[in-house]
Image (cartoon, rainbow, N blue to C red; front, side, top):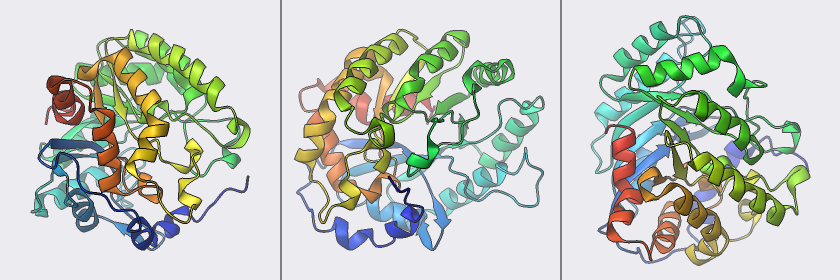
Length: 337
């Protein structure tokens, strides 16, 4: 498979493509907290507050959002450990000037958790966030064949077992901060070992651990799903772990939607996603799960209104209390919004 290095510029042309699939909004009154989105200006493609507002105000009742680090807005004038604080500072400034119905009420930034001076970096993030800073994502995503991936992770080798890293994750818990990670499905056992080692920190698993469906994983969906189910069940025994359910429309998940002439509708989304989502909820319980958009990354494959319609269809048979957890209250509790 040839890696598409131009995937971000391609996103600039997605509006007309996404507009081909339109649907009536399901349960438009249901309150939503979107706990995972990005902002950026990259390769000619802008996704900042105006673009986020266009998505969050497209029919669903999105009332709050959480920004997730993505190497945006780093401070070029700062030393390497402090450069990511520029991201927190700029996103906090954008949040203050935003007047839309969906308020940005949380920021998860980046710090190298192996840094012996970690507290100084965390102090700087807290000051820059002006009440919005909630935690750190130092993602572990790493695969043996990154050249086969559209969005290869940059996780260092054996990050989760590194004693300095584990010390940093534990420090987050001691300070009342969360730890987020993005990783691949085959990294679940290593992440479970990490979770057991730092029981005092809330760990947030993003994107269902990104089950891969490209490169050497093409055509292996059934076997990957079977192993993934067992690994997720083992991870769920760690009560300090919560899970974000979303981010499954990335090109590396292997559905191929981004290359089609027309984007999927919510019924197709549910048809392929429901078994994965229901297993997560069965293992973790709704109180430890939260639906997410992962926009604008997943926007390369599906529109915001269709995505949340699909999530509402997946949640249709859960109780009202469970739905409230999945769509809003888990995110509010975990990130102290």
